[in-house]
Length: 240
Image (cartoon, rainbow, N blue to C red; front, side):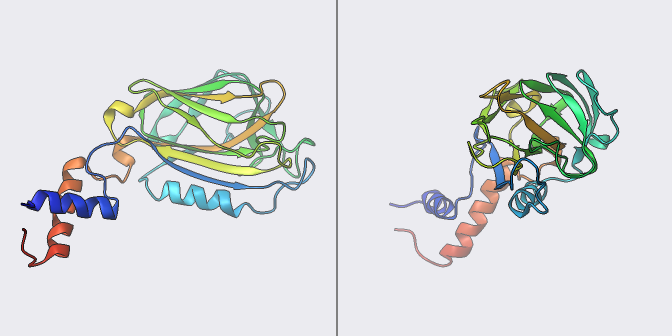
């Protein structure tokens, strides 16, 4: 005999509605191929769309774009996300100022005149747990490098951004992700480079959000939603 619960669960599976918290982060990615080392992309619609989709899942997100930091500044670097919180950037790299064009080898800012440039590992330590993080990456992978992200605290996550390798210089990507349970929140995120010292990357517009700022219903709410949809779809059909 079929039960009401099994029928609802079947509908949930068809609709793709989660019924329990998952350890798999929700990710957003878009990448626009570059025009070469000496030319800044006039537009990057795929990356911008990924950013818009990421931000649409957040309320009151905080973004840091390096404009308030002195040109040439290195780590440790104080990072202020406004109402979303503060952090410290540690590791290898420095702030670069490129008002127009590129730095001659494919890197440039996305907003304003400044960005973070590095050819090695760096990390961001947050003063409060974070559940969402996103960023622009510039000139990623033209020398076969890939970005990896590792979170610290709670359940560690290791993410491969999946950027194109050996593509043209000056490309722009956006990568963002959020987690849905307290055990997945993190207080540090580390940027890895699979070709350290060979492939240099640019980064801009870091955005963060707490779990309270992520537009994700609690598991109990999802179950109630699933049940309501099940009743609506099943109507007066008899269970056998």
